[in-house]
Length: 605
Image 1 (cartoon, rainbow, N blue to C red):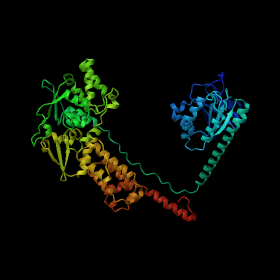
Image 2: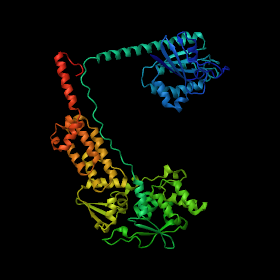
Image 3: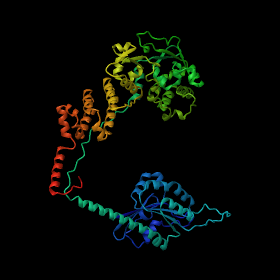
Image 4: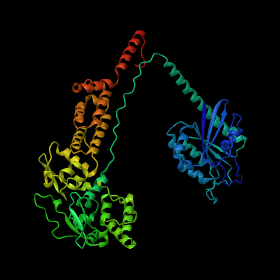
């Protein structure tokens, strides 16, 4: 058996000339008649650099005493995990301070006592607050006295702190035999005896409980088999949109230099999703909507849309087949436009890389600064002032999942319209091609949809298709129910969007795992039907998990009519992995027969 004491605080007098003054805990261990076999190695007695000093000894003959002395309160700031572990394993806590160090006492009261309270979390661990030392200038209580009251800690302040903590307060004017052995030692040893009595009582209870276990016990019900864990797939949202710039599919805007040579092609919806300058340029917003003269001047000074470039395409030709011609007026900016577009398409979070690329290309600090300022103006939020800090990677990042949401299910810049269940859903080919390989083939191959604005959709509901498009635009989805998640999973499998399929699988699994047994028994949701759909639509992970789920909840599902719809192979799997197992039920029946034959009441059952 052992007693763990944790001591916090520095009791050494800052006004004392004795730099070799022993600590309170070490003085007690040396002077107490009850202590023996003290670890007096140099590392324990004299080491002052470690944050925590550990002493080990024996008390009351054969009880192991472990003392952790922490003179520096910095342990709570630098290593909260260690300090919390020390407090959690403590049987007694001692808090020490010097009565001549008012500043340390105030820090203790304001900062560290609340931390210790929080770590104790209402545990009944005795706490001793020890005020050590003789006061050098005793403060006068006369209200007319002008003596400095801030140097010493008064008795009333120490008592008040002990009351707030629910602790025992001791004043130790000197570390001599009387104060150490009889005063401090007497209180500390009283709490040690209380702690040992409590541990002995708990040990006796465990022993009695173990003796009861020697009786004939009911069969142990093992935990059900662990169901397969489904891991999520990492998002490739940013790379999808970045690759769109390389392949130049469905480009609907072409940038030209002033000498009419083409520089690069791009996509309006991507540009407008990160820049109000491009919104203004492509008539997504009007000057009256922006209310920022700097954005208006940037658009006018940098770009010019050629007359007739924005004319509508013929009815049977997609708008993206006739790219808008935009002339870049600034020749220096135009020479770096390709790098700037790569920066925008990558999510606008690699500002440092953009700086390096432009510096290498221009090799002129003034021109580099000029181009970077133009980029800041392009990415500027109306009404905000550009700063260097805004251009740091964590500040300037534009999340397409937020900005592209503005163009989800809106006719603004839309170049394709899906017809589904008698309704129309506008969309943007650039986003669809970047995010979905099936749609990329559909809009760029020898298919009817490649040259058509109206595209019919079959085999899926309007709400499900809207949820599917929302995922393509925002990289997130929030199904309202398990059935809706299954419908979205089927749509994702139809268009081969594997990550969305995995998200739906995880949603279904999470919802089913959170269902209590009573709700699972009464629900009208057919788990077997979900299993059949998952298998049919090649969702192997979900179908395997659902089989394990049925086997784990065998007693519930075996009573439902849908259980008969399982195939022979599926039934065999469920019977083999069922919980509780047939072996357990057989052992339970034998145990009940034994109890009945002994004519005694089973307290466990």
